[in-house]
Picture 1 (cartoon, rainbow, N blue to C red):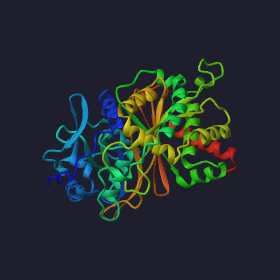
Picture 2: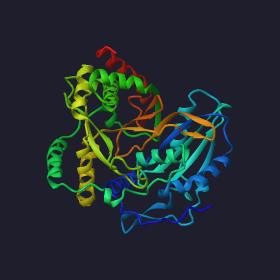
Picture 3: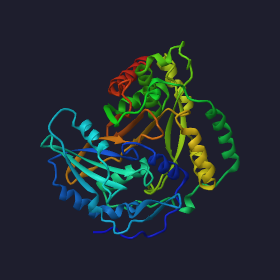
Picture 4: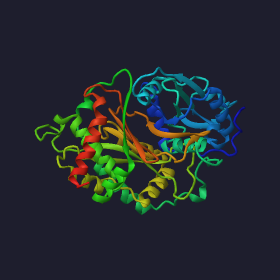
Length: 424
């Protein structure tokens, strides 16, 4: 069954869409695709049942009526001709063995998208256990951002039968306030002139393929620490990440090292969709914050205090950024390229909550991890994907020195260090 034709013309692609599309074309190893891996408890279904479900629910995701294309050197969205959602469903069998979630993520990172369905897909992975399976949604980053992907997962497997909006209504767009925009840029641009700290992983050549390593943590554990320290959950996550990176390449943070006390900068996506609206499903509705990670700081309390000060985004900033990107598209794209190349930004960090209450039939989702992009020649992508009472922390890299397999353990150790420093 083909998708319904689009009901409205989409807006022109944003500066973030344009930038990510071009960055993705230069990426290696299918790195332009991101997604969500959902672990279900129940007997693995036949792939035909998954295909029927996607066909039946495809109208909930109007972004699927479009595909990414390029016209005269510029990105555009056009109606997906003869789009059949059933063609986007695939099956992978995994042998029994340890860490099926990690092995499923590894398998997905290596799978190319079929030429007949290049923009999005849903994969059924099973075979390691009689009572557990994975469904993974993957999508090209120029078609949907992380929040759009999470909203799609919620529309497919969440309660109710709701259709996502294609984009943000024009009357909900924030007005341009020139003074706020100029003030924000005046603070941001001088800070971005200085290069980020040089660190060992960023100096190593990329490998032939990406790897993913992961761990789990209770969300309440992060909240409890945040309450004790006067920090948000996101700031706690970033402080643990800074501690893990400090332990991952310790020689980089010695006072004798030529980077000295310079901080390592991370790119953190920030959703700019207006509050109170269902999440728009097409395109990238995000700002890009450049966050300094205090890896050189030996004291865990001061590490978190630094991020409480530096890793903040007010509603006014979100609105000013969205309005500025809307009216200054070429300038916005140039600023994105300037801020987030590898000389000024070393890695990407992200934090997204997957909608609660997901199931396939009567089979509930029991865990989720993200599969984000690895772009811009960054050495590492770190993500937190919360679902229910737990969160998956994942590390994607195409470097092998130092070994990224050490990062999950180092992250949990850094979190424990923060808890001990705050008496938790």
